[in-house]
Length: 115
Image (tube, rainbow, N blue to C red; front, side, top):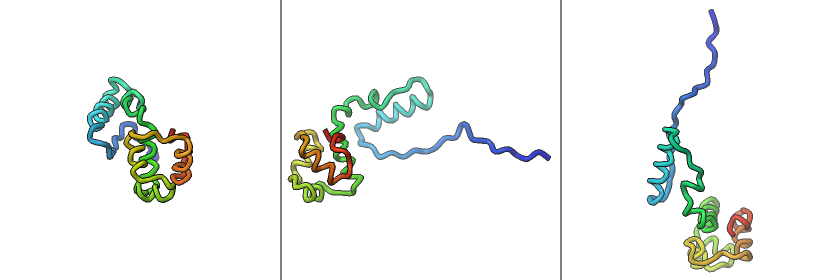
């Protein structure tokens, strides 16, 4: 009697849960639909072109969340006022090289990601 061979599934579907801002939900759904039907593919830069301009602000917020810090806690670690951190995350204030270095040290990341 032949032994069963181990077959690798080729058409498995997985469920993927994402937490995204409400304004990005439609774009992500269109991107996923396009991938599913393989009608058209997009790069992340194409799908979220408007977010590329906000990369330092998004990176700052993402690294802060990764380290599980509030803005106030980050402010205490860096001696940067909390309202300045809020303004940097919202694109109302530029980060600057010296502040990027202080923030990066507190957030365990490369400061160039914040510029």
